[in-house]
Image: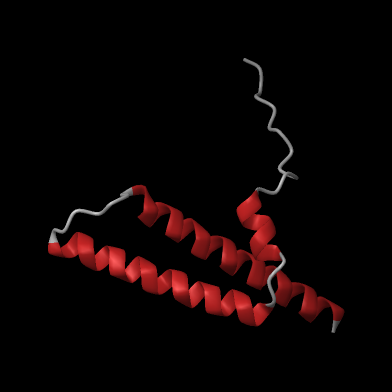
Length: 82
């Protein structure tokens, strides 16, 4: 059985490009905004209200993960460079 070759992941999608270009303060602010929006959606789901776009919860969680990844990478670079 042949191994499946993975494509290189050097292509950044538009979401990542927009986030990478932001400063640390802006990223922290964006993360807080996205978390608030996620909390609102979770509250709607908990109360039984129908959500306009159910996939939005997943997208918000992924956005939070992207932001945290970028912030951690910048912290590592800063720590490494002194």
